[in-house]
Image (cartoon, rainbow, N blue to C red; front, top):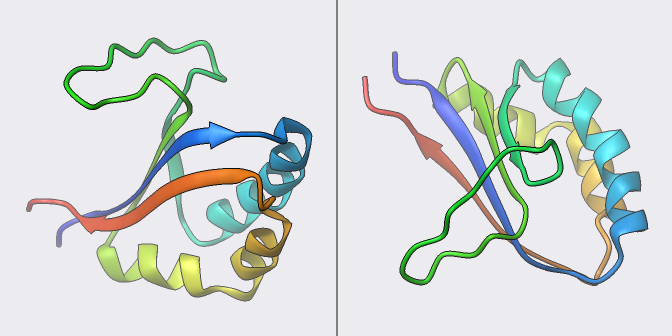
Length: 101
């Protein structure tokens, strides 16, 4: 079965403190849904090199055992509560994608 992934790119963050409040709720919700954070750049000290139209701002990659599990985690009550805390001043490109078997 193909894995599922959450891919989040943050082109603009105008309120980092409120984003931290979202992170505090989202982290446990993701873990409860079976997600594993593979990368969070640059906040965890990782490196990024952007090419073409890429950006160097925050990028988060989370892995789930399946696409359905990734979707269910997003739709969970706990994650929906985290989304309410996501500040209006954060621009986010978020996708749930299916991996290749």
